[in-house]
Length: 213
Length: 193
Image 1 (cartoon, rainbow over the protein chains, first blue to last red):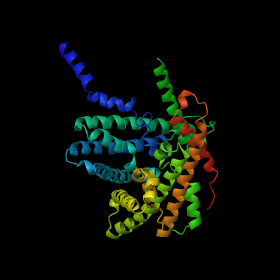
Image 2 (cartoon, one colour):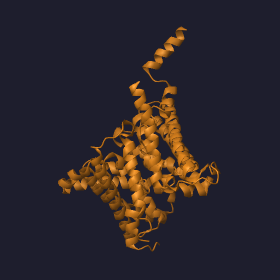
Image 3 (tube, one colour):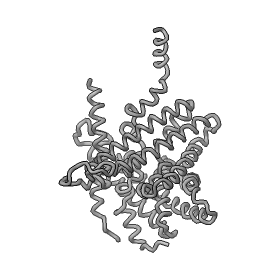
Image 4 (cartoon, rainbow over the protein chains, first blue to last red):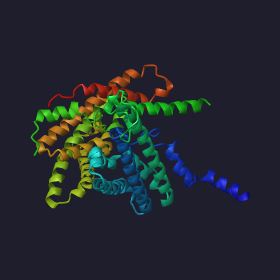
């Protein structure tokens, strides 16, 4: 019993690694709450598969760069830190780009230049700067996993809605009967803006409700 | 070599495939600094300027990388060279014309890591544009970006006085407006081809 109590107080003083993981899923969700890394979110979320692939690629780069930044944090001079972070991120993005090309040429064609554009995803740089450069490797891994899963989830939420309404299918499997009239607009760029806006409204609704008690 | 005419490249980059509203590039500054007309105009000018510079850089780097047969260095060298060139240009402007420097202000360093800049460099390489074609492409993309930003800022200034439900306030509202703008720009498709 007594150990349990000390554990609890420890948790209050410093967030546990589970907490670092959980925060990325909901409380600090990179897309819905922090509104970071919007470009890929909107651009490749026209089908659930594209969205998932993009999310996983970003999560991988996020995890690897967080690990490397955290392990090098005491060696990188403060003045050139941003440049070094970008170099580290660009290296992993190049790896992912070539890996996806090797796995599936079709997927690579669908995602196009947006894989390369993971480099300038503000989410990854902001995690490197705000978290990994100040915390231990273990914590940075948990943070990257949480944020990564949160990002994948958000992308999937968008992609699933857009594919379902715009194509009547999910992962290329038809869900609605033949008679379903597709909402072409959902696959088009405008649909991306609208779907994200609706998801943000849903999140805001819960936030406002909670604030009111 | 790509044989597209300059006019068609320009119309395509600025209106039909607008970087913000059709490619979703540069959404962060689009959402961030489109609150006021004045900042939006300055930001647009700065982005167009950086796009022209990075377009020249990207053309040079690509030629060099093809010559030494190292395409896998493309991404890394693009981002590093573009970032450092912008830094140099910033120092140069500060020395030569403090007025212009003040006008561009904080935006110049910020937009270096804007995805529209890197996206432009990657697209022009993919499309195998010549140097002059690349410059027209960069100019078109920059003007398209400025246009989207100014339109957005104009609408948002009006929305300040509108009564909006609590849940829609903030980013959600901006995104809804962006969606409608994007729909409007779809009307340009087929133009200039």
